[in-house]
Length: 235
Image (tube, rainbow, N blue to C red):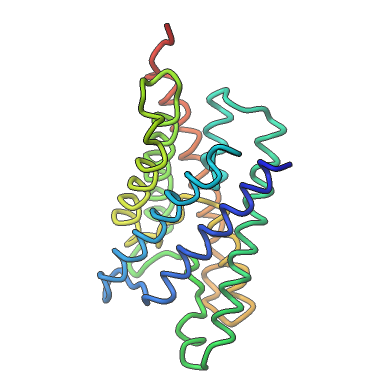
């Protein structure tokens, strides 16, 4: 149970800090690119912090797409896979609830500006197809980094796994945020989308939520397949 609770806490921190930064900085990939960089760093640094805080307890997946990739790579049981995902979603809901509380407790002007709660959504001019492809491609890259850096057959790379994973998430955000706001993590998307609706946020956040669940899962599965092909043989 401790590893499940660790996943819940880690995902809560990721959503609170990452989405919280998006709200506080006014993240807008077209009109406020400096805030994009800040938001990307917030998500990446959250992963680094949690990797060293709970990595020894649960492995610090804090992302159902990573958990699926780890499961398909043969590194965890089906039971643990399911329980990790459940507690990750719960953690994401808690993080979004805390952010919602902060936003709605602030002045009216800030509450209006932060009503989206950092929820993912298709950005201006981006089609559903492009958004789905972006989530698949960038999740695949991210999960592949996770699988490679944490593999026991890949030399000493796992000594720096937390740092490498966090930095890669920053990179993924910088490349993907113009398309979808960057999810690559269903648990990160579900909580903000649900709570944004409660406080009058954009309706599209919930309508397009399926993209940020289906896309990352497909990307995670593809990454697991790629890693199985290229994984070094253990001596």
